[in-house]
Length: 54
Image (spheres, rainbow, N blue to C red):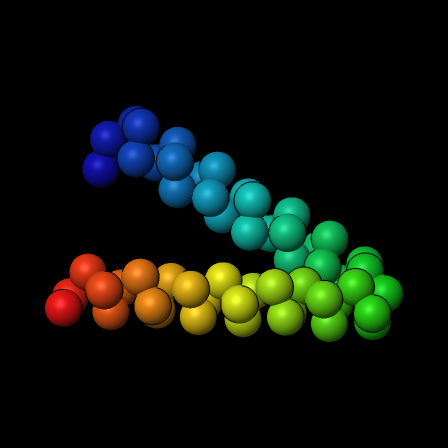
């Protein structure tokens, strides 16, 4: 893999680690809101993928 690919992977992993730590520092109410928002986003992505495949 090239330099650019390694850089992109590194930035992605660093972002995931930072996001995980921020999520763990949130209070319980905020975590529930984040979970609901993520579930909504996943449903929208599923709908979009179904439209693309049909």
